[in-house]
Length: 96
Image (cartoon, rainbow, N blue to C red; front, side, top):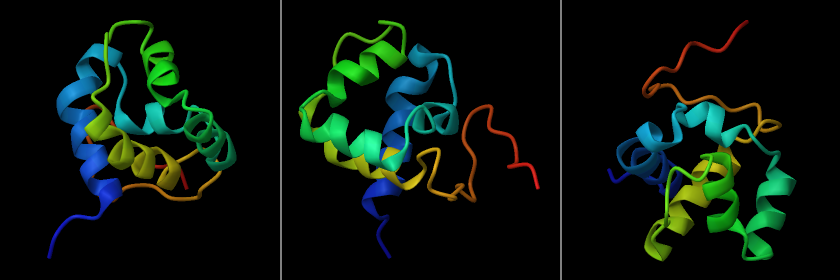
């Protein structure tokens, strides 16, 4: 079984951006709601917003990563009610 795009996006974030952004994947994804992430993507501002969230510690986001990264942040946005079962660097369990 292959990973879905959101899982791939989570892996990309963890491997390529988590250290530079100095935050785990959940902190990153929950910067916005699903509607906000959708608007950011539709306005072609995804790369720019990602760089801003990471305090300009990343210089570029390869275009090929954007679909998977978007699926990841949309799935785990602050209003989604979703939380990954496999947590990445520095993640802590969701409070009950």
